[in-house]
Image: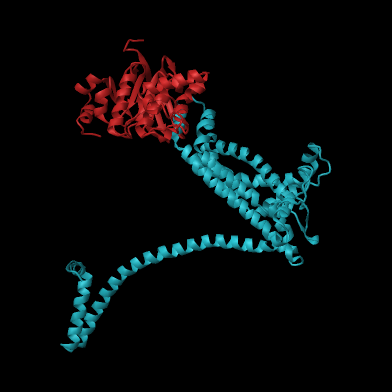
Amino acid sequence: MSPSTLNDLFKNKVVLGGIVSLLLSILSLFVLNNLVFFVVFLVIFIILLLFNFIKITRKLYDTLGSRLMLFVTASIIFLFFLLLIILIQGSLRILSEESLPSLLFSSTWKPFSGEFGLFAVIIDTLIVTAISMLIAVPISLLSAIYIAEYAPKKFKNIVRPFIDVLAGVPSVVFGLCALLVFVPIVRDDIAPFFGSNISSGFSLFTAALILAIMVFPIIISLCLESFNSIPIALKEASLSVGATKWETVKKVIFRASGPGILAAIFLGFGRAFGETIAVSMVIGNQELIPSSLFGPGQTLASLIASNYTEVSSIPILASALIFVALLLFIVVLIFNLLGYLVLRRASKRWKY
Amino acid sequence: MENPKTIQIETKALNVAIHNNQVLKNIDIQIPAKQLTAIIGPSGCGKTTLLKSFNRLLEIQDGIKIEGEIVVDGINIMSSGLNVPDIRKKMGLISQKPYPLPMSIFENVAYGLRIHHDKNQKELAEAVQNCLQEVGLWSEVKDRLHDPASRLSVGQQQRLCLARAIAVQPEVILCDEPTSALDPIAAQQIEKLLLKLKKDFTVILVTHTLRQAKRVADHVIFLYFGKVVEQGTAAEFFNNPKNPETKAYLAGEIS
């Protein structure tokens, strides 16, 4: 031990006191033969030791805490890979019996006769998601910008909680409402209006409609978040050159919150793409490409929901459904990565 | 027009309350045209509020109540039925921290021009170049006009904001402590620019540094707790203050 560390050690009064009291207790036991002194000094020693120990445990807690957090985080990341591995392993069986192209590009889905073509379902998924986003994005943007920029403060404060609650309503509630309200409306009014008289109301369009409604609150809420974070001085800068409010909104606010809006759209897309129960309640559950939007269809997610009860009777169906799940997983993954990349580029470009 | 006594902005019994808190009390001031008027006073005395009432920017915030008259070029801009963007176009604003719009350097200057004038691409480019030259930024940015404005340094950004403001040919330039976020050299550049610009524009400068006001102002308005304590020419204000509070402020006794 070098003199300087020794010095440091003795500068610490607790350590010094501890050593002295230990020495004194040994002294009192062996030299003075006095048990009372021995106990007193031993107690002092233990107390000082505890003091020191508390210091150590604080440090220990700090280390343990960060390790624990690391462990928990690592397990979550591990879960991601575990899920991917399970999905890939589960789909191996169907992939060994059917070629990938025939799975993706054949459109006959007849599990009982061993045909697992997903093309129709993939097309339906794309159509439903696209239509729901086409309806949801413009309406949500307009309403978000109204709430953020035009609405009086009172209105803002009243409306905000409603939107947040709407975002948290379980999707089966939306599905049920769609079943009771949208299905008849589509059957009796909307489909005939577009010249399709034989629609049962259970259709791609109905599904897209309810998806749009489920996506509204997510997009509105996230857009509000990013509109509200724009500094007031940026708006002042635009207004002070004589721009009107609408010009400011269109050219400055939309641009400045571009990354936020994109993030909101990506999240909304994820919800619409993966939504299961509400869709399967109103889409008609038929694995075909309908001739019109008002015909029945099936999305990837609702396919799993409406087929999983048959898994025990047709073993290979389980593998086919896992393959569908893998597709969902991969698309959501790709979309998220894409969103992340776009966001990073956009926020560099549109910084203010 | 060259008469220095021309009054550009005049307020009559201007009262402003924010959330029932009286910020400006009975303000009666006159701001001469084509001069640099400094509004000074300790922080929180209502300088910025007064400045923003001139181009009706106050009302975009909640809970603002404005009473009284603000006469610009003989028109009370507080009267109803006026087109507010037209009022604002007359007055460029430079804020404390530069806020370039989220677009390229070129588009920042062209922003107001695109709104108010129907210029073709060539005229637009010329106008942008003129404005950037006017603020001494042209040589620094001419090779990267289409880079995002956020890549400029803070000092450059502030000059860009100035260029954006003068592009729409305002009559007045309102400056809200434009140098407080800048380093001394960039601040000096802005000061020099303001001195140059007062030939063509009426410049109103809110500042909390007395020395800056002394260096650049022709006319001074001293605000203290929402009231105008003293106003007059810079020479008179600094050399021969009449009000005891002004004297105390100049001596650094109140702040």
